[in-house]
Length: 87
Image (tube, rainbow, N blue to C red; front, side, top):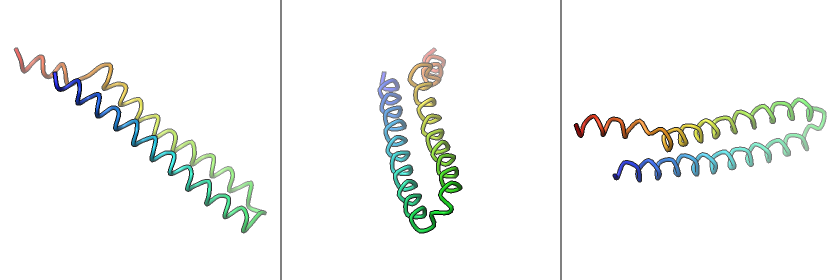
């Protein structure tokens, strides 16, 4: 069954690329936060609140992708379609 191997490959790509994107995004956001806090230290508290909010949103997008990949890996809807076509 090639479908199972393709789904495993797709799940790995979704999780791997999502993790890479989230890490790069949080790294860039953290560096920009440090730059802006060094330029205007009086805005550090407001910037920190916004940075943590955005970090949560970036991580949420990665976790949603991980959930979808795990859903496809465990309860694969494509196998049910193959079973109906094969009959």
